[in-house]
Image (cartoon, rainbow, N blue to C red):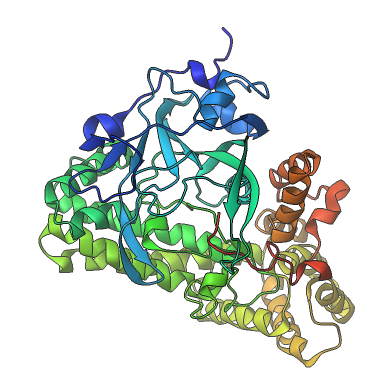
Length: 532
């Protein structure tokens, strides 16, 4: 039996069928009190054509790769709505940069419904950039190729790094131009439009619950919570006041695991508003993200955040907990006592610290000892990395080769450590800024020699925990510029490289290089905005 194409699938619609929504009369922006979502159709585009496709995800979903043009691509662009699709835009609210923003909602994302994967699990397919909805406020509901390509690439790159994330199935060009002011500085210009098909078990966010709580729509709040527990947390049992407490603790745990992965791979989300926090603990909404180049806890790629640096790399663990506290304020209406939810934040803190420690120990080739010495060793490393201005990805990858080799060769320490810093640091050697990291390396190596396994096994562990390839912004920018010229070869090659981030792939060494000089101030490489 031939594998069906997406437009031939039978869609399920549990979100629409089980929760209270409106059938939108039109796409006019407005307040939508009393509803969880609005039924709304995507707005057709002029010339939908496939730019990129994720074969592995499609195979898992049981979907055949489509031709460049045709009915499946029409569906992925919003031009075709099949009989079993019930497209909708969800209503939610949120705190943006710490301030309550009121109703937000899916202003340019429209979900088509859910498909059943080859293992029986359910996955929602959502089109980002599919046109205006009642939640678009003053926007046009569209997205440009620039931001859509970045989301497509990063969703899959994070998946292959092992970071909890939403996925991306396709990238479709629309044939239309979309006017955007990239840095909100009065320099708007037309750019090619695109739509990315995002995939996740659900796209429900903290903000969905905040919306219902703020509007005192307790029945909608309870119905939404019960829906999420039944469909996405069935192991917690039937919904109940005690079940809501267990559920909140599990959300805290999953969020902690996600953020610990961000912190140990050097990822900066850039816009951790509560409406950008997945209820499943998945990385969601790839906008002004970036990877540390060099290691700097105060760095944010988001120009909108330059004033406060609220969402800088080093602030992410605290911001996630703040966001979880805002979720608790919404859920207390179901529990009756906010104090019952407070232990969930303790679960977050302990899970984050434990998970980050476990991952960092693997990155260093060390086995857990639960000693104060190891805690200080890791803390000292993070301080020294910032002082030395090293590229986090390159430093750990180089350390994976250098440290095991030095277990039995202490006489080579000086030369090998200086070679490591020369490869990873953005500050030329010699420089006093490197002294703390050199001192740390001399403390780390005796601890590594205490390991009882072989140097070969230690190197394998470290290489499996320290990626060689991450989606650096300058790589994404190169893919964008080529795609805008009609050349998709760089995008396709980069996508293949990012599917094996822990493999050496010597033929693709150029994708593992430090940020080049030309990219330090170039828009899209060093700085981005929330603009699509």
